Amino acid sequence: MKMKKPPSMRRKKHYVVFRLLSDEPVDFYEVKNAVWNGFFNWLGEEGVSKAYIKIFKNLWNPKTQTGFVSCVPKYVNSVKLALSLVHQIGDQRVIFQVIRVSGTIKSAKKIIK
Image (cartoon, rainbow, N blue to C red; front, side, top):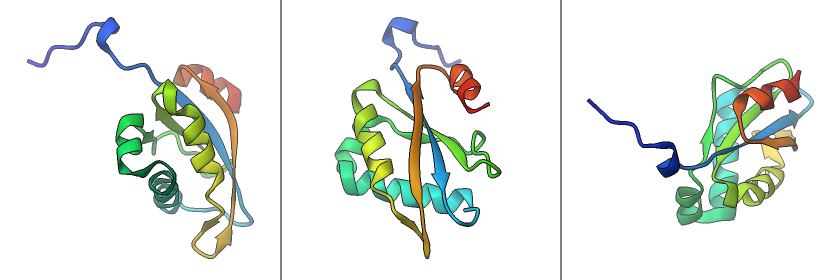
């Protein structure tokens, strides 16, 4: 049986809520690949591993083109910058707009609604 770490030993997480602005809807996997490429270009492999970045598929909303990225609080500004550096997905020009940074998914979902 795997034992959980006590709360004092767990990593803190922040959730970056973003909106994708584009002419046509974009598939989640295309967004994911473009975002990861942006992270690797800006932070490099070592920075990405230290930031503990995760992109949530189940929180991607294809209608509003909004999504969530989690990271360590120290790297929030770097994640926001890496998102803003992605300008093209496939042949489409896109803009990533960071809506807000939150400490919990629950409060971040309230912001979107």
